[in-house]
Image (tube, rainbow, N blue to C red; front, side, top):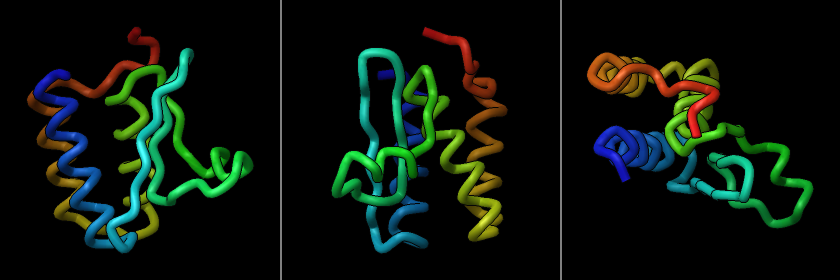
Length: 94
C-alpha cells in the first residue's frame, strides 16, 4: 500500500466519523475498487458505491462526491493537499 493510499483511507475514515456515523466500506473486485459511506446489506446496495480502477481513485471519487453534499472544507483541503503531494489518482491506472 502506498503512502498516498494510507492517507486517503485515513481521510475517508475521518469523513465517515464526522458525517456518516463512522460507516464506510471499501471493496476490491477483480476489475475495480468500490468505496462508500454505507454498509451494503444487499447486492443492490453496491450501486450506491463509487467505482475506481484503483483504490486511490475510488476513495477520491467518493470523497469528492460526498464533499458536494456535506461541504466540509477541512476534508476538501486535506484531499487537495494529498493530491498536491502525490498527484490526483489516474482513472486508467492499474
